[in-house]
Amino acid sequence: MVTWINALARTRRQFSDALSRVFTRGEKGEKVDAETLEELEATLLLADMPARLASELVAEIEKAYKGLRVNGRDMLRQLLCRTLGETTSYTWPEVSPPLSILVVGINGSGKTTTCAKLARLAKDAGHRPLLGAADTFRAAGSDQLRIWAERVGCESVIGQTGADAAAVAYDALAAARARNCDVAIIDTAGRMHTKQPLMEELSKVRRAMSKNIEAAPREIWLVLDAALGQNALVQARMFNEVAPLTGVIVTKLDGSAKAGFLFSITRELGLPIRFVGLGEGIDDLAPFDSASFVDALLGYESPYKEGNHGVPKTDGG
Ligand SMILES: Nc1nc2c(ncn2[C@@H]2O[C@H](COP(=O)(O)OP(=O)(O)OP(=O)(O)O)[C@@H](O)[C@H]2O)c(=O)[nH]1
Ligand SMILES: [Mg+2]
Image: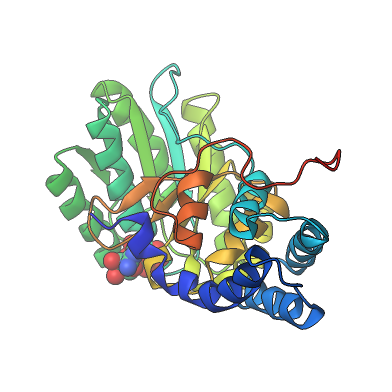
């Protein structure tokens, strides 16, 4: 299993030089000059952090160093955790079964692999998942999910190539009920957010699911490839228009140096990050939690704990 700390090595490398420079100076009681702060801001941007956030963070850090002895790295850690908000790892909710999850995204983002990994996590948590292959575009799409379902050891409904994706999604929910499965994870074909007919098909899939179970799909999760960085935001906005998203899954965090864009997902889009892909293996999907993410980003070994992490008291003490 790939760990957070390993998966985030590439993004962390981007940060480390500039961070060390700023923070060792600060800790030695030296002045953190404008040039160093500029460099810090540039580093944050290079990791694809949203521009507004980068300048706010730099401003906070600058303020903290004015005449105060603070641990800058700890402070940044706390500021970043605060930006992501309180996130606790996703727990499978108690709903009238099956819990229906629709997984969407552009081509190659990692949807099918992620569906399988989700089924594995659900199974490990004691559930009975069913995988539904509503990617009826290519034979390879449904074959891939069938193989995964066998590996995970879970039920599946595999649509025929060329079949109506909406009908397959409907059938998958019906099968989940009939086979006593309490989690139904529906994989869809990759579609470019700019292709209108494909986006309309997604709308249809969603409607078909709600015809089977009133509140379905309970979750619509967008799978975003971490290599895209900030460019992923446009996709998220467009998918959100046709299928109101309830969360985001970021895949391939292990190969990306742009993990800073995760801050944009929560901050600019207001969407929760539910899971992150840390590698290609079936076990390499982790429920997202902000503390693990920030710690891995900054190179902390132990998990973040709430407390006074060097943030100066506002009363001047
Ligand atoms: N390193 C790494 N690779 C991943 C991760 N998630 C998926 N992949 C790889 O990304 C590639 C594409 O994954 P798929 O699951 O087939 O993507 P998809 O979105 O279903 O693709 P289409 O159905 O063609 O749109 C595969 O080689 C996966 O192994 C991850 O978290 N880390
Ligand atoms: Mg696929």
